[in-house]
Length: 77
Ligand code: SF4
Image 1 (cartoon, rainbow, N blue to C red):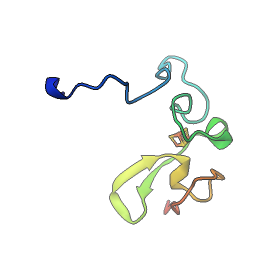
Image 2: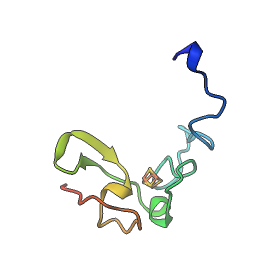
Image 3: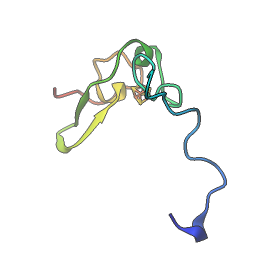
Image 4: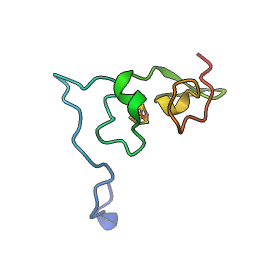
Protein backbone atom coordinates (compact mmCIF):
# COMPACT_ATOMS: atom_id res chain seq x y z
CA UNK A 1 0.00 0.00 0.00
CA UNK A 2 1.64 3.18 -1.21
CA UNK A 3 -0.49 6.32 -1.69
CA UNK A 4 2.08 7.68 -4.18
CA UNK A 5 1.68 4.63 -6.42
CA UNK A 6 -2.06 4.18 -6.73
CA UNK A 7 -3.44 2.11 -9.56
CA UNK A 8 -6.63 2.97 -11.39
CA UNK A 9 -7.15 -0.51 -12.76
CA UNK A 10 -7.96 -3.39 -10.45
CA UNK A 11 -5.30 -6.13 -10.61
CA UNK A 12 -8.06 -8.74 -10.39
CA UNK A 13 -11.18 -9.02 -12.51
CA UNK A 14 -14.41 -10.82 -11.81
CA UNK A 15 -16.11 -11.63 -8.56
CA UNK A 16 -14.45 -13.41 -5.64
CA UNK A 17 -15.80 -16.91 -4.99
CA UNK A 18 -18.74 -17.21 -2.62
CA UNK A 19 -17.24 -18.81 0.54
CA UNK A 20 -20.62 -20.25 1.51
CA UNK A 21 -21.23 -21.85 -1.89
CA UNK A 22 -17.91 -22.02 -3.75
CA UNK A 23 -17.97 -23.06 -7.41
CA UNK A 24 -17.03 -26.58 -8.47
CA UNK A 25 -13.48 -27.15 -9.62
CA UNK A 26 -11.00 -24.36 -9.07
CA UNK A 27 -12.54 -21.65 -6.93
CA UNK A 28 -10.76 -18.93 -8.88
CA UNK A 29 -11.85 -20.01 -12.36
CA UNK A 30 -14.43 -17.22 -12.74
CA UNK A 31 -11.68 -14.61 -12.50
CA UNK A 32 -8.70 -16.50 -13.93
CA UNK A 33 -7.58 -15.53 -17.46
CA UNK A 34 -6.15 -19.05 -17.93
CA UNK A 35 -9.29 -20.98 -16.94
CA UNK A 36 -10.00 -24.04 -19.09
CA UNK A 37 -12.63 -26.78 -19.05
CA UNK A 38 -10.53 -28.91 -16.68
CA UNK A 39 -10.64 -26.04 -14.15
CA UNK A 40 -14.44 -26.37 -13.93
CA UNK A 41 -14.40 -30.16 -13.84
CA UNK A 42 -11.82 -30.80 -11.15
CA UNK A 43 -10.33 -28.90 -8.21
CA UNK A 44 -6.54 -28.58 -8.48
CA UNK A 45 -4.38 -30.18 -5.79
CA UNK A 46 -1.79 -28.21 -3.82
CA UNK A 47 1.65 -29.32 -4.99
CA UNK A 48 5.24 -28.10 -5.04
CA UNK A 49 6.33 -25.97 -7.98
CA UNK A 50 8.87 -28.14 -9.80
CA UNK A 51 11.71 -29.18 -7.51
CA UNK A 52 11.12 -26.21 -5.20
CA UNK A 53 9.43 -27.68 -2.13
CA UNK A 54 9.35 -24.22 -0.51
CA UNK A 55 6.74 -23.02 -3.00
CA UNK A 56 3.43 -24.74 -3.61
CA UNK A 57 0.50 -23.92 -5.84
CA UNK A 58 -2.95 -25.39 -6.46
CA UNK A 59 -3.36 -24.90 -10.20
CA UNK A 60 -3.85 -27.27 -13.12
CA UNK A 61 -1.19 -25.34 -15.00
CA UNK A 62 1.34 -26.76 -12.51
CA UNK A 63 0.45 -30.34 -13.48
CA UNK A 64 1.29 -31.30 -17.04
CA UNK A 65 -0.89 -34.42 -16.67
CA UNK A 66 -3.98 -32.38 -15.75
CA UNK A 67 -5.16 -31.88 -19.31
CA UNK A 68 -4.81 -28.09 -19.12
CA UNK A 69 -3.44 -26.92 -22.49
CA UNK A 70 -1.04 -24.46 -20.82
CA UNK A 71 0.32 -26.92 -18.24
CA UNK A 72 4.10 -26.82 -18.16
CA UNK A 73 5.21 -28.38 -14.91
CA UNK A 74 5.33 -32.02 -13.97
CA UNK A 75 3.54 -32.47 -10.67
CA UNK A 76 5.94 -34.28 -8.34
CA UNK A 77 3.08 -35.38 -6.06
S1 SF4 B 1 -6.66 -24.21 -11.89
FE1 SF4 B 1 -5.19 -22.60 -12.38
S2 SF4 B 1 -5.62 -22.08 -14.54
FE2 SF4 B 1 -7.39 -23.18 -13.74
S3 SF4 B 1 -8.77 -21.55 -13.04
FE3 SF4 B 1 -7.57 -22.24 -11.28
S4 SF4 B 1 -5.86 -20.81 -11.18
FE4 SF4 B 1 -6.76 -20.64 -13.24
